[in-house]
Figure 1 (tube, rainbow, N blue to C red):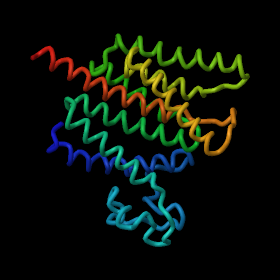
Figure 2: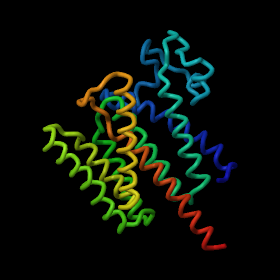
Figure 3: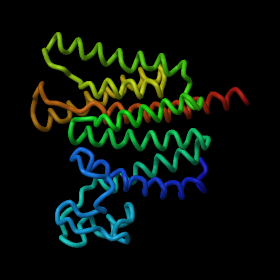
Figure 4: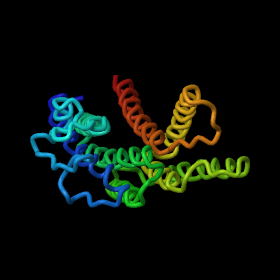
Length: 255
């Protein structure tokens, strides 16, 4: 990792993350992501630019609005931090073309994960955007089209089979069709083997979280959990781990 590149790209990513927060808040509410300018969700007071510095402003203001002193959600610095890490790691580690692809796709996936986690829905416009990014990457040979085709089969068929089995056994649909769309997108990106690993890891994470909630709040077999956040986190972890695994293997072969 090139730390000289990491820090300025981390700052750029955090700025991008500030915009992602706007999308996360406004898109599910069918509000424009352009107008009006950023404002406090409680008192609606416009946020001046010097109070809208990613991460820093939140820490200086101790997580409160400068005008009405209402609590600001921790979502804002967390999204900015994650986006900064995505952009910083990508451009300090990957080739420029691949770094740009992963940074943009990762940013869109972060929006999907957060909105699904809050509202249990995946807006179609985000699915179309992510799909377009992956298709462009395939056209530019950033992503292998052969792996992409096999990955689609895994990303769509396995969740569809799980949905079918759950419906036949419980008469409930365990996942939404937005999850199938997400599986298609991630399958195109990751390919078959990484997609299988991502699905297994996501399922494990869901079980762990569900068990933790059940221990705290009581048993409820009908308790819903969004699947997209866990699948997206798992996919990114598998992708990053795959990069370091390939780098490790290449290092062994060259020695």
